[in-house]
Length: 201
Image: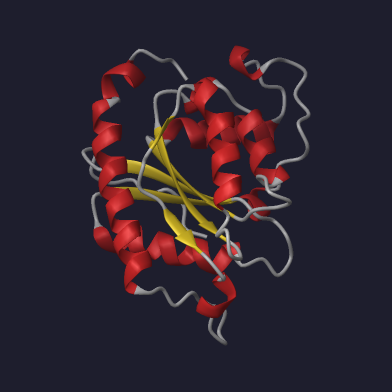
């Protein structure tokens, strides 16, 4: 997938995290669509982080993540990547009315690296469009001093938008919601710059 783009320092560094690691997941085409939308819109240096590629093991660090005394190379690499980002979009399904385990694990590996950064969601599923997972994930992220956007992309009955080439064919509602969320992420990220400047991560 696409690595972090090093470019204009005035551009918001956005990390898009594809949460599902399940074989045959819909999350990949959904994530690729949003990645392309963010890059085409401009104003962002985008890092597409696919948890299925990153393959973090189940939490295996002996120290609390707030201490940042990481002992594993995969944790150090994940820490550096998240610390570089200034805003996040979580592309997530809903599993049994909640967030998927790989996303919770990826969040829990770190602590300080998440602080004072805004986040939004591209959620998908059936009738609920993954929104119950969104609400649960917000509860996980709030104690990390992260800030949710009101704007979000919610895709109900997502299978109908996946074509024979396994690409997401977005409609106008999805495109407009994505643009509104990206605009808000950029604004909130700029507003939080001073708070982030006090953190050594």
